[in-house]
Length: 126
Image (tube, rainbow, N blue to C red; front, side):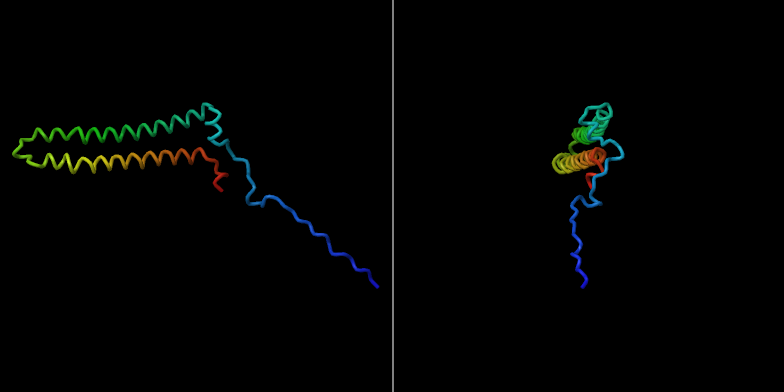
């Protein structure tokens, strides 16, 4: 009678699946440049600060222009202007300020999102 062989031994391999292995980045992430305070990291931060300052100064300039022209409405003769000046002050100025503020916030968030996209490592998001 033939001797029966035991079934083959099963081995379980544990480890990180192939698709989730972390590959080293092709370039040094900007985050390390910033945290190590290199000149390149300082350039990244300066660029963010410049773009935020440019957005803030742009919003301030438009606001100063729009609100700075409002006193000119008081120079119009009272008979010609009537309640138009007060409507401009009470009803027009606030929505304009709101729109300028909304534009500024959207621009600042876009600047920060662009900076975050530059700083984060593409391997971390996958």
